Length: 265
Ligand SMILES: NC(=O)C1=CN([C@@H]2O[C@H](COP(=O)(O)OP(=O)(O)OC[C@H]3O[C@@H](n4cnc5c(N)ncnc54)[C@H](OP(=O)(O)O)[C@@H]3O)[C@@H](O)[C@H]2O)C=CC1
Ligand SMILES: O=C(O)C1=N[C@H](C(=O)O)C[C@H](O)C1
Image 1 (cartoon, rainbow, N blue to C red):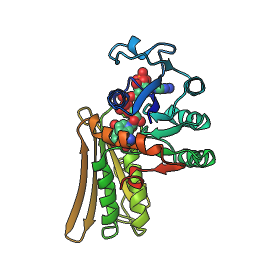
Image 2: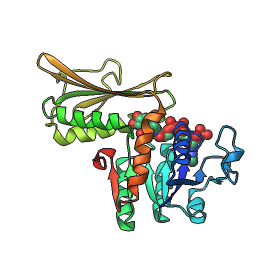
Image 3: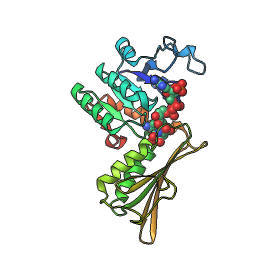
Image 4: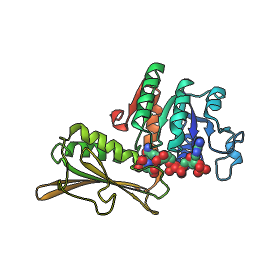
């Protein structure tokens, strides 16, 4: 079966990489793109894009209503990712969402919609297998080391903070870690934000710098020891094996899955 795919965010760093991957896969076909600009043009008309006759739509609803497709791949920006994905599911498409920054409420709403429509939807905070393992290792370590700080480091074009990966890491850690406040009970910030974000006592620090791609350290502190679990993505190809896996897998699903760890064997 050939999977007909619509990509949102085709001019972006992830979108470009994903389109190249899709065009090289025998069982995948790119049938349309959703972008912020270039409505009515073909991908081939856009500088730097592959020479393929694939239509571009600005309005996601119009795109899903007029193009026959199986899967929607969302790789644009947080502000539009939810609406795009709702429109995809309402029009009978399955969805793979890589865009970060969806709220817990939005994820919940998508879960209900996917369930009602009996359609697969994968929300992947991080497609890189190494990052998924890093989160799983961190979840295991949290059972023994409840004092934890997460440092996520990204390029300075990133719109959301903390990263989707850091939030998912925290969610997974909180499933196994005992509740506890960290640091000195009387600690005070003399510069606001110095201790980062704090949820259930776990602190998250977001670093944004040119030169970085996507990196995370989870640091565990114990008596006389620390444990650091680190993952680094040095380019966007690091995500593509996961994107390909999710596009193939979502077709077998009839509900929403949040996190690649729930679909990897
Ligand atoms: N899950 C994962 O493993 C990964 C997730 N990501 C996430 O994927 C998303 C994209 O990342 P990245 O490619 O680096 O970001 P980019 O900024 O490079 O790309 C985003 C693209 O979306 C476009 N865009 C803006 N508005 C719309 C719209 N309404 N419809 C369609 N496209 C639109 C932007 O256009 P313009 O620039 O003209 O505004 C831009 O081309 C981010 O949320 C990021 O966090 C990234 C890497 C891995
Ligand atoms: O914006 C990015 O680049 C990335 N976003 C995702 C996130 O928010 O965790 C995944 C990866 O870290 C790259």
